[in-house]
Length: 216
Ligand code: HEM
Image (cartoon, rainbow, N blue to C red; front, top):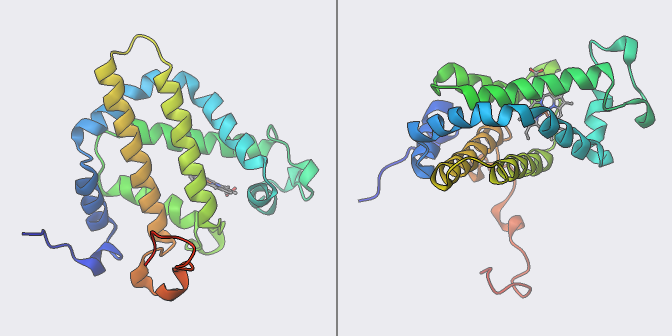
């Protein structure tokens, strides 16, 4: 018999939702341990990874714009024009540090307790439009794309590392994969991407049936 899942709670209770997604993906204590084992291995590469992430975000005007708009606390360095905002400016170094700390915390967390879920939820809320004046309101398309890019960077580093046996490497890659899909889900919850949200008619999401045989 199919296990019952409370659809409404999935969209209102972050812990319930996390438990469901974890069970679905089989994200277990073993995955958490694998992430903890990976942490000291990957830490020396974190500055390069973070730098690559920000270069990517600065390579498109549509993503770079968020950093130009958002300059609270950096009035002395405020960049109002595209050309003024450098990747090594004070505000960008600070943001790089924040992302670096976030990534390190994900990897070193030994217990995925409510406080930790709350931390991830808050970061998601801030990117969506749910932290009041603190919100950045980043379009979800960029969040999804960046999670994919970040995962790719981590997997690539890990894959090319010597001295880790195949089984451990495999388990770490699987754990990283789950980690990114879970984070993406926590963020997506803040965007209300669920169809139960009814923010757009289901009909409008269908493509022209004559164009693709997979759609009906
Ligand atoms: C996809 C995964 C992402 C993660 C995990 C992430 C994580 C973070 C973290 C941890 C912070 C610092 C939060 C704090 O101040 O406490 C931050 C800030 C920020 N993020 Fe993201 N971010 C992501 C995607 C993006 C994207 C795609 C954009 C823009 C296109 C973006 C734009 C910003 C901006 C502008 C800030 C600075 C806010 C400020 O200066 O107060 N983020 N992000």
